[in-house]
Length: 475
Image (cartoon, rainbow, N blue to C red; front, side):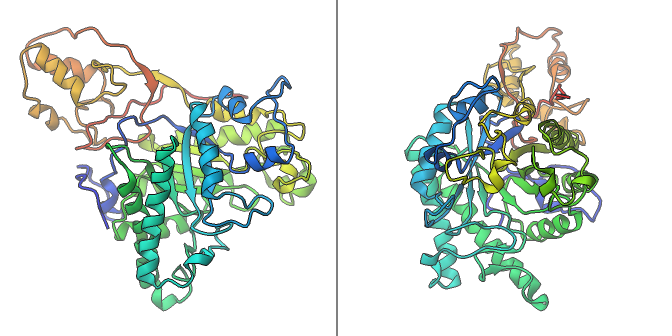
């Protein structure tokens, strides 16, 4: 199911590691920074029910603008096939398109979360859309492909091309039950994963078919319980055996329902080391009020207060930024727009959102917003916003050289083309290029301050990673 022609990175790993996934999919040309994101899928419904949003000073305003001012760059929007429009089950394509347009107008990036259901999809519920129930497996597979393609086409045609997509939501136990359900028959485990992988591949193919002019959204497969190392290892190991081609691994992490924070850290590290893929916490959340409604509050590392919520956020961000090879790719706060409205639509009164009951943005939003910063890219000679093949070509051409084949030989264990030392493509490497052709000084840089790439480049991608040089600390 590997639809990509991307060659494998020349990196040796112990035998227990999954080799097919060492060939990461190349990121898009405008690869982005750490995905500091929020899920605002309920925003329009809450606004229509009277919710008011305020900045930290208490001034009313647009929720997306307030979050952008806090530094939030990414916005996750769930998508139901044919919702009943009761309560918060409202996220059809029209609703989602309008919300995505608002995000784009505010300068944000959009992650579309395909539920492939008419209602909530999660580990305990993956109900097939009513209109799809009569399809056989072959027809269902094709429907997943065409539906996914048509959604992305529609969003693109309406000025809301997604920057990333999830193929399924918390699919720990599969999706589109019962066709793609897992753990039903112990004797049929391989066949169950075969069917699930076929459905996932259909969605990924739909994304590919919709992408035009080389613009392709990043793709993610998302399961729950980011603290369960054994579960993640097994699930993504099965997908790796089937060579499913996607960009990012996604988990959820809620202290109330999942394991300890140290277990989360362990699983994130193990996932990054085993699969070599960028890892995203596609859903995070922690209450800022109501400790009496948290039966395990005395076991949490953080107080159930606005300050404790901010501390939780900081710790989650740090756990991701501490992953090897810059593989901690992002975090999304679920139900971020939750606050009081006329009919109290927000789940649990909104106490797990990023706005308090008066609609004032909470400190945790700023902590998450600070998790990504624009950086100046050393070596960006052509001003493209990336250190890439074009920069090396310019260096060589300025001194009468056109052959860059020898540069490809400079491959370190990090898998970065052009990296001779240090685990990054930097001034040192460009100086070495010049020295190899008998010159000692580089041309002036074309300074470019842009978001750093979100994915580690691999041999053949020709887009290289510039490491983060910051650590967020809001305490």
